[in-house]
Image (cartoon, rainbow, N blue to C red):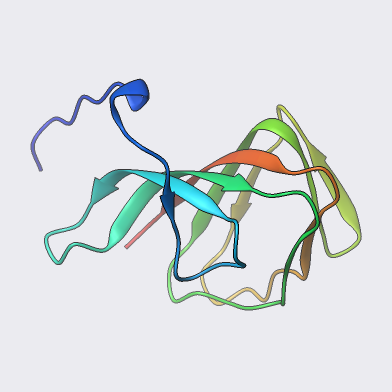
Length: 105
């Protein structure tokens, strides 16, 4: 893989198809098939998402705001690694959050 260097301020916020309406992202890295591998994910106030699992591990670093998952709060500064096949969620964010998400695999 080649080095990737991006200034996120050069990217525009885009609506996501995979999340609740109003959720936006800036995709920082895509794989060879065009699937996102790293993104800044902006959760809107009143964000909700059902529990789910992934084939690969997922990493979260909360940059701003807070979200809750499985009854636990994850405020700004929280890092979370969710193992492959682990059911995680439901997710909620009362006031919104900005999360760096990295998908392995």
